[in-house]
Length: 61
Image 1 (cartoon, rainbow, N blue to C red):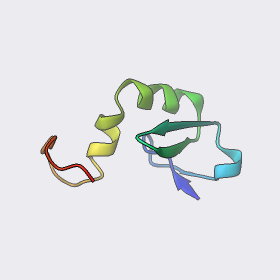
Image 2: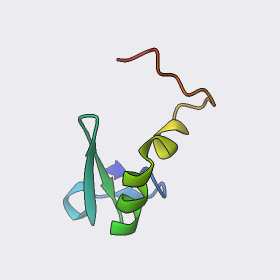
Image 3: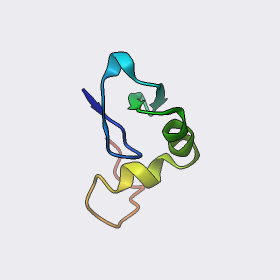
Image 4: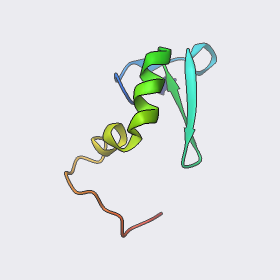
């Protein structure tokens, strides 16, 4: 199972309404609207997973 980064819902990869690849990682969405929101500002949704407020551009994996 995958987690919709926009709404936080758990999504079955095989039944996802939409998918989007960002920086080599595929994200799954419960609805097309979530994908649209993610496309507009992916860092907004991914940043909160890190647990910090910093917008680091120096450390790349």
